[in-house]
Picture 1 (cartoon, rainbow, N blue to C red):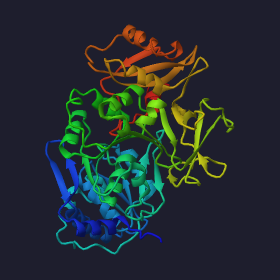
Picture 2 (picture 1 turned 90 degrees about the vertical axis):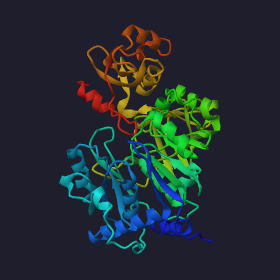
Picture 3 (picture 1 turned 135 degrees about the vertical axis):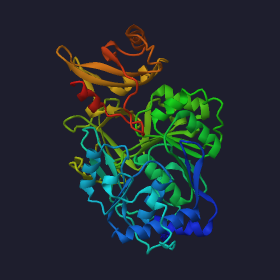
Picture 4 (picture 1 turned 30 degrees about the horizontal axis):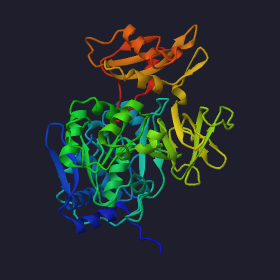
Amino acid sequence: MTKQTMTPGARLTQLAAERPDEVALIVELWAGGDERLTWKQLEQWANRLAHRLAELSVGPQSFVVINLPNGIEHVVATQAVYKLGACPMPVSHRMPAAERDQLMELASPTAVFSDAAELQGITRSEMKALDHHPVTPPPDAIPQPFKAIASGGSTGKPKLIVSPGAFNYPIDSHPFAGLLGLVDGDRLYSPGPMYHNQAFLFTHVALFIGASAVVNEKFDADRTLAAVERYRPTVLNVVPTMMLRMLRSSALQTSDLSSLRKLWHLAAPCADWVKRGWIDRIGASKVCELWSSTEITGITVIDGEEWLQRPGSVGKGYHTEIRILDAERRPVAPLEVGEIFTRAFDGPPQYKYLGASQLELIDAGFASVGDLGYVDAEGYLFLADRRVDLIISGGANVIPAEVEAILTLHTGVRDAAVIGLKDDDLGRRVHALLEPANFSAPPTQEELDSHMRKHLASYKVPRSYEMIEALPRDEAGKIRRSKLRDERGG
């Protein structure tokens, strides 16, 4: 018997009727305190806003830009877009106007949520002044495509990754809820930015299955640990940069993290020492990793207990076949690094690029987003780094993530990024940009060299170091190495 499917709009209406006074959404405010919405309040606000959007001709297949900071309005706007079967397009409110406008031209949005005056969109203030719009839901519609995520990619050229599938599932069978182990009654805390695929997707999946969600206006290690203690989430969804900064917080050991059933991390390689620190703190079975991409070319998962048996692995394929290929697209032997090609769910990836060429497909649906890695004899995948970031120095391959992980082991280094700069002798020399723990008294080159040579072969040790007050990571913890390289004549 086929299970009945529901749209996110219909599901929100159902949850509001079944549990009107239960808290659905909590937003921790940077100034202190929080804002909360019950299921009934979320439903009624989303309905009013959907009727406002309908006046602007928003409907199925419309793109709607959500150019708002993390906050309660961001979530409500997305739910209103879903009510009309339209496609939400979250865009960072901090993005430079030129880049933002390039993205908007790609999508030709029907409506915009933004406080930026030049966009003439629906502002957050206007979102709160909808009393003359009805609280009843508009006619149900299936969102398809169900999201469009902005990406600068490795080239820095803005593009949109459109997910063409339908957001229409049985309420207990959303594929990502099953993957994450999210169930009705859970509470998800995703402290990253809502324009990033991770926080955006997982938050709205959680609401769909009946889990409450916690988000914050801005990530801070101490505040995030305090929020876990205060709001008692059962699932925490983070990126490795957040893990590192919380691990170095003096509050980590005293914070009550007992509510957590799972900590999921993804979006970037995680240094072994950072992962071990979290395993030691909350237990191996709770620390889980997911490797994938917004394009869903493939998915792997691993929990901490498996990882301790195979340190560095990101797991086996989850409904995913994995191939490691060389530059001529020939298979390489186990343990040999090559480009990772994957095929998920027995078919090609379900995405569409706007503003970029589509991914190369080989052998009926295998695709790569440019990650390098290898598999062991049992099929466990290990990441190396991005193909575009690989440094070839004196004919030897240097993987930036490996060098960065050792640099951040040094107590005087808060954060690090490694790039390859032009060198007449080596072709490329390894150059490290460091964010010192104390900018006025950074570690010396001699101290850093001594530290690095204890852990790495000499050709991987940076030839030069550059101290900067703060690395330009985005709110999701990502950094564009190619931009750093190009700014230095690389």
